[in-house]
Image 1 (cartoon, rainbow, N blue to C red):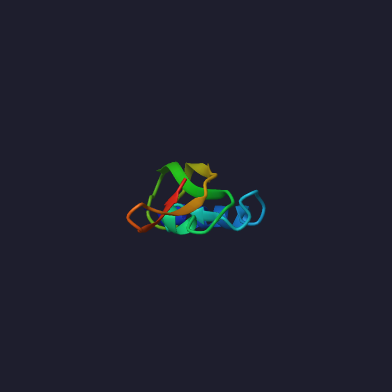
Image 2 (tube, one colour):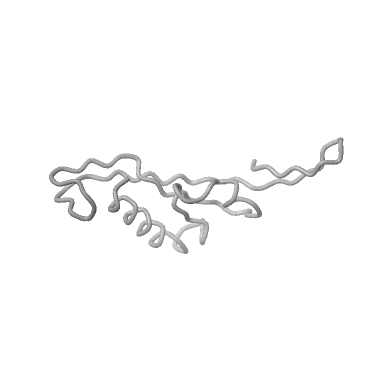
Length: 95
């Protein structure tokens, strides 16, 4: 994973957070699992990920000379549901 890719994802999250219907529910998909993000959330979530990255020239660290990055923004509209089973167990799941 390139440091540049990680920085681009972080910048995209910061740019989108608070400026979309997901409000503060914008996150880097490589950091948190969906179940932890959606635990008590009833609003949409946007996961930012890099679908494809191609670089030319020197490909180490910050020293990339040129390239193309394709972002993927996954908008998830789901809610966390908690219910009790017939044997008395409490179960939480995302629907």
